[in-house]
Image 1 (spheres, rainbow, N blue to C red):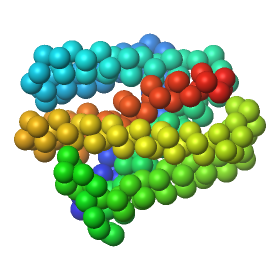
Image 2: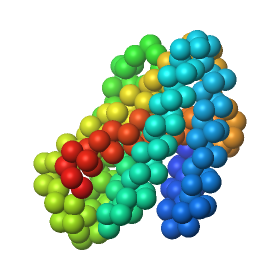
Image 3: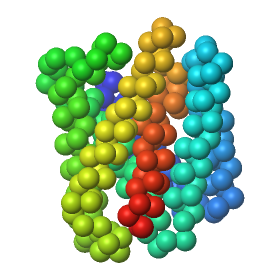
Image 4: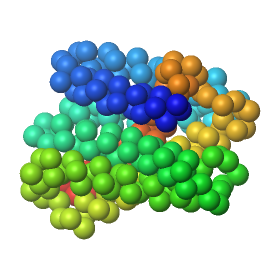
Length: 216
């Protein structure tokens, strides 16, 4: 049941973000600001240290700025790049959850007792599989238009998946410190908005850096 709720939330988020992309710039900016404010609010509630509150809020603002910059890039590939990062983040989350629940095995860290090494493996497998299906669906046009070699492509997927998992663990660490299960209750079956996008707010700034590095 939890997996079904998680899957439904993920599918809804994908379609919602897709709508954001095809919507007008004004609607996109307004909703992006709204998401940013909700995320900051949940972060401020979650943390106790003034330093953590300040640094976290600044980082969240920067993260949402990179989402805007990737989406509003004049590059003809901005749609593919936008979806690409979202796909990696969501497939990483689902892969970690599915493999962790089915295979179980040794715990990864005390920070998040539910995280396992099998979950890490599943996150990589799901993110890589999802990314390959994505470029296959586009008849590999994504690679040709971005001038990405397969090696660069796989490198970016693995690194972004890793960073997405680090984002998940980071928020889990602060939830454990605050002794709470979720950062909020805005998303049915999955807690707060920050619970759902913890990987994305880390992966988007990293993706923006890579896209600049590889001149995509």
